[in-house]
Length: 202
Image (cartoon, rainbow, N blue to C red; front, side, top):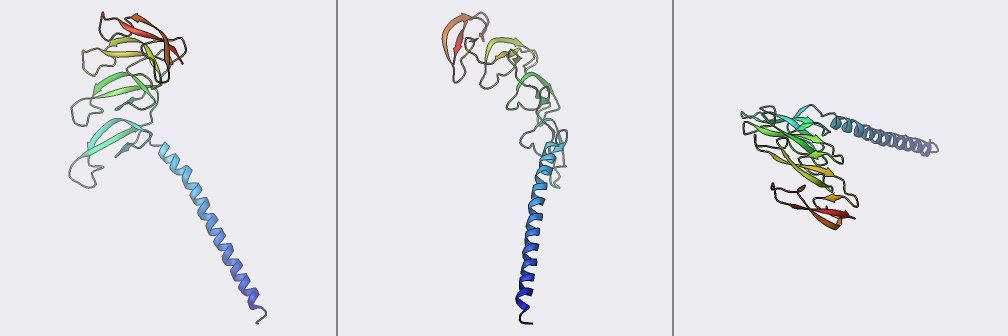
């Protein structure tokens, strides 16, 4: 019997090691399987209602109800989530997009009867929008109701331009210099008052 004890002990030890390795592998693969599922869940929130707006999303409607009040008797805001994309109407501007149209209505209103919503656009060179893409410039200012948040009051729009050497622009964006200037009305914020354009160099 004494001669077999070491073998039995080795057998039990091997079984325990095998079980531990199997358990560790199971936990590892379980963790790996959860990551895509979590990512898929996060990617699938477009068009759903939520108590807050997670990173990577915007919203295009709000409601006031008790869904997110934690059982309290008062209402709280619930958000209709959207994935930011070209053409989406959103209740807030979104980093990485410009917007080219402002609409007043009740969809985004949380306190006042009306609030603005913004039509998101992926900036392309030559596009007229209410805002200028970060790192870009503009070469023409126009006025219309498209960007106005006050009915009947025209607002400023900008023709977005991607900076290139030799472009005449209303201002030199960060990282760019200029080699010449000219007087023009293209960049004027006041009618009849001339402004300056800059020939970019970078």
